Image (cartoon, rainbow, N blue to C red; front, side):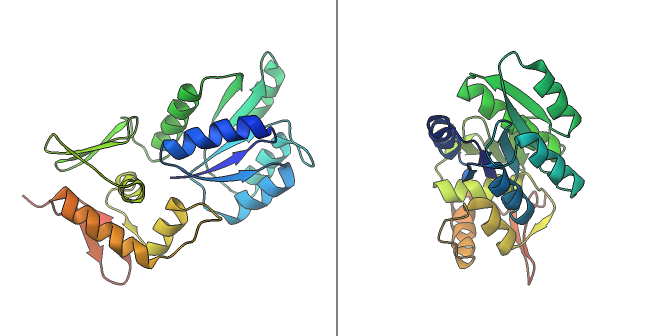
Length: 221
């Protein structure tokens, strides 16, 4: 999954960014509202963490612009503790959730997982396809109850497919959602990751749809 972190505090940006990357997210950062507005308009994010107190353009204006432009990415806003008017304005402007500073990073990650699940109509933190189970809380994968060790990129590919079961996902889309903006992207490596996943999972759950991409489906019984 790919996240946009919009925060102008350098220390907090480092803390949140590190936690997100360790949790398996590809992370892009914007330190001001104008940059955030542009990035949200031009890049396909799975979730955004948006501070309201930003230079150049405030976070509330950024959020209103995204929603007016039809951007439906889940947005969690960060507000100053005790400022309930910001919370109300943010929710009314289209935010999906909010957190008051200071906060626990573990709670932030849990709320982001919930937002992403809700967007895809998923109710559990454990995703499944046939014998494959993916625990998004612990970044763990099991097949028939046995643990499977995946690299970071292999996990990101499987995680994205597990959030889109039955849908055909192109190599381009996978590339856009597992790499950050400044990463060295190569859609051809997706084939490598898919091949490794098939070998490691040992079950035929990833189907190639010729000319279109890949689809996750339970093995035929």
